[in-house]
Image (tube, rainbow, N blue to C red; front, side):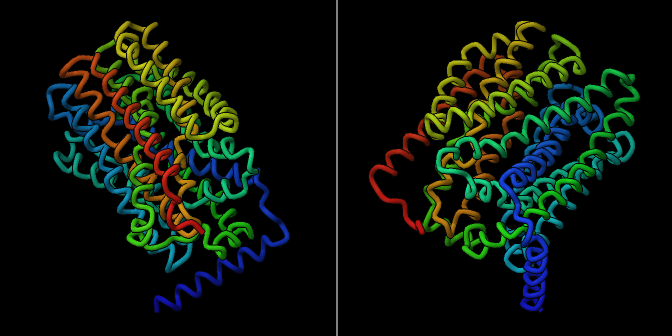
Length: 447
């Protein structure tokens, strides 16, 4: 039964590719598909992250009298998605092998959108008691599980179509989804926070961005399926360049590359949350300006970050992707000495922290994806890149808001600088180890 279903699914995908056979997908179309897909994922990510600061501590964890502790509880639930994501990758790779990439993406994105939209209907603790945090945790796990299945290989397809001298530029394209997604999420929340009373915002205003997230996921699904059904994607599958392989087999060949790839982007991922989710919680809890006005400052920061992500691609083609990531880690380490003082210096300091922080983040984050994935052999590229991405987000970002707020509230804002430095050190060491391994032995499993 499974084999018959697999053959049927494969034949349907081949038929879809034949329809597009006379209409080759241009690199520009792949770029648009990748950006829309990543923007949808990051929009879901940031809608939940912003609500973790502005909504859930007061709605779901209202039984906790201390606002800081309630926010820490909210951030603990935030982390669950990153724990579920690798599990989702493993399950959906099986779906991919047995039922096809289109089936996998359809199930994953509808699960992602459904989990996100379900949060929009979530009653608060005052209405259903402890079922409220329990349901929130369940929906958050659903988001993470679905994100594991949302890995489509389009970024790898884009890299395969990149000219030899433009690989850095093409590598930064998927990263553009982050500033776009964050800016849109912040604009929506900022609009409702500024224009509604606090009671109306907490009652119904915050729910609208979650409905929008479902709609964006539907658009992203069709954008991705169009490329998955293309001749170029089919040829990459037939050449085994975008085909999932058993995880244990991949780890036997590329285990060290997965570990190094997970730690290489740690500096940018540490910075990622320290200019998005964490500062919003700090401003909300300890003052400086209103949440609504601060969200619009973050939108401006995201625009600056968008520009430096693009700049990172241009620089990487001159300097090399790993060297660009190394330079970014050093800049983040330098910024860490001033970051706590800016964030604790009132409105002007907070605004400067956001603008400068996003500018630095873009230079590093723009090359954080796939900085070590070029070491994966052709056969293992798809599975290796997916698992490396899952682990890097888990290690570098999953617990970042929880750890950052815990350190800052308990030990002082100065410890945020130490948190950034630790991420920068991990990135520098991972990149140096990668260079040593590359210089001393030929990577295994290349084909």
